[in-house]
Image (cartoon, rainbow, N blue to C red; front, side, top):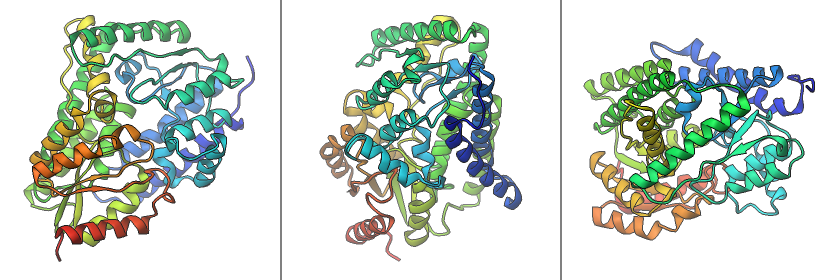
Length: 434
C-alpha cells in the first residue's frame, strides 16, 4: 500500500477547515454562558474531519456520500462518510475560498453551473480531498451533479475508486418506495464488499429508532418556531438539519443536543423573547442556506429590520416515522425518507406541487409576512417554478421576493446589494415600519 501522510496535498484543505472550525469551538468554549447551542454541531465537524484524516492515513475504510443517501445505514455500519459539497456551505470561514470558486469557473469555462457542483469537481480534480474507499453517487435531485462523477471517472486517482449510485424513481408511491428500498439493499451489498464491514440488522434498528426520536424532536422544535416572536433566527434551522441528517444521525449525542435546543426555545417562548428584541417581519427563506448568509445577511435583517427567518427549506421537516418491525419495513422507510422527505430533495426531485404545498403550509403555520425565494443561480429547476410560487403567494396574500443570487459566492450579488433589495422590498410592501 502506498504510504500516506497528513502532509499529502489531498489533506490540506480538510486540515485548514478543521482548524478554522476548531477556533470557533474554542471561542464558544471561552465565551459561552449557560448552554451554547452552536458548540456541539461545530465540534462534531472538527471530530468528523479528524476521523476522515485518521482513516485516510491508516487505510481504514471511509466513504464519500451525500446528505440524501440514507445516512442511517452509515451510522449503523460505523462507516465515516465525507462529502466534498460541504466546502461550499462553510466557505465563508475558509481562506482562499474566492480563488477556488474562480478556478472552478476556469475549469468549466464558465460560472453558470451550480457553485457547489463546480467546487466539488474542482476539489476532486485538484486532489484537495482524501480519496475514499468507495463512493456513493448522488444522482438526484439534479442532473448537474453528474458532472462531479464524470470528473471522478476521468481523474487518475479517483477513477480507480468503486462507485455505486442508487437509482431514484420519479414518483412517490408504494411501487417507487419498494423499488428504491431494493436499490438501497444493493448499496449495502456494495459497501459490504468494498469496505469489509457488515450491516447488522439489529444495529440498524437501534439507529433508526434513535433517528425517529430525532425527527420527532425536530418537528417539536419547528412547532416552537411558530411562536410570536420566534425564539431563534434562521441559522438554527440549518444546524438542526445537519445534526439530524448528517453528523449525528441516529446517535444519542445528537438526540441530546436537539433536546437542549428545544429546552432553550421553550424557555424563550415562555418569556416571550425572540431572536430580536422587537420582531417586526417573519420570513420564509425558501431555499438552502450557507454559513455566509447566517453570519452576514441574517444578522443584518434582524438588527436593521427586525426581520427573522422563522422557517427555511432546510429547516422544514415533513418526515414520517420509520417502521422498525422488519428489515423490509426499515429499508422501505429509509427509501421514502431519502426520496420524498429530505429538504431540497423533496422539492426539487419530482413534481412542482411540493414547492406550492410547502409554501402554503409554512406561511399559514408560521404566520409568515413575506416569502423569499433567493433564486440561487445553481437551482434552475426551482427558478422554473418562480411564476407558480409567486401566484401561490398572491393567493395567500403575502409578498414574494425573488432575488437572483449565488448562495455561496458573495460577489455574485453582494451583501450591500442584498441589503438594498431587502430594504426597498420591505419599504414598498409596508413591512417592518419602525
